[in-house]
Length: 163
Image 1 (cartoon, rainbow, N blue to C red):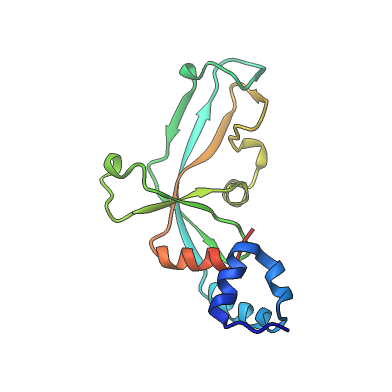
Image 2: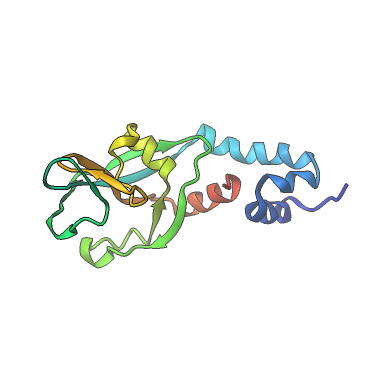
């Protein structure tokens, strides 16, 4: 068996995932102790939603005239607690920093479909650009912004739970 120090194992694990556990099965115990921190004290993510409505009736293809689509950004900030294995998505620079005058939020999370399903519960109302057909006169929802106050915990979480 190959023995590496735990920090080097975490670096390898963050790149290749569970295949890194073939190096030594004792690393799984170490990984479980680190993950236990997030189970006992889960991550709190804040988000703002946006809703889209396509005018008319019936079904249309997605290459719809987007100038007539109405949207509404929620004014309230809501919170979700993550204490399970959910891939969060990419960390991106805050693109709305000037618009919201929010200097405290430096990075945002580009949400994955799993997070959207946790928030909205019904997969039929999630706005997805991969769909070919859309229903007109139906409200679709998406996440406008998703962030966390503690960026270092998010980075640590992303190293412990990989895709």
